[in-house]
Length: 259
Image (cartoon, helix red, strand yellow):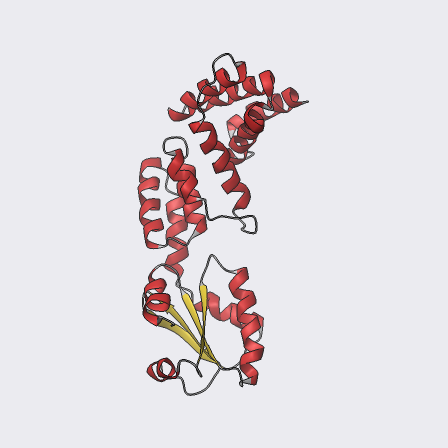
């Protein structure tokens, strides 16, 4: 049985919910439905689609004043913040969404990501993820903040990010770095000793020593622990970005070690 309170009202406190009231006999509904479904897939980190068959949920339709279909209502924080009736082309719905999706939802996250103080950024990201637990961009950003001190939590934050998500490559980098931070030292292995030193350096934010020792591990045995030295270096370079001083200082040296 459909639970409107849970699946729409409560959910809308986490992410905006677009409700499509439709019926199988309705021609315009059959036109609009696939358009909304395509948009929901394209903008899945922005809002969520719920479809309600008014033939099966007549009481709900009455409660929400549905007199003609298709009827679309956008819920945010438990309230309707926008609605339209009838079929519309995709570009008009995209414009309507841009006008009605609450801006604070996006502006707030961007403001957090721009926060210069790392401790404050982490704290604010925690609050944001608690409020919007389905926002993968925020969970990824928090995982990046935590991976060197709390790798298990970082892994858990990106667990739901899969290969068809835009954040997949960055989530894979987090998984690799979390694996590095939890790997036990193997006595007698030069690569393991270098990675252990790198792990200790990462835990204290000594990133230059960390990348130096990871490159040393790559030189000793780049295939050690399922290519961990090589993959860890690549993950760090991607995390830092091309313009970061350590990427510019050590990427060429790393590439020379590889080949």
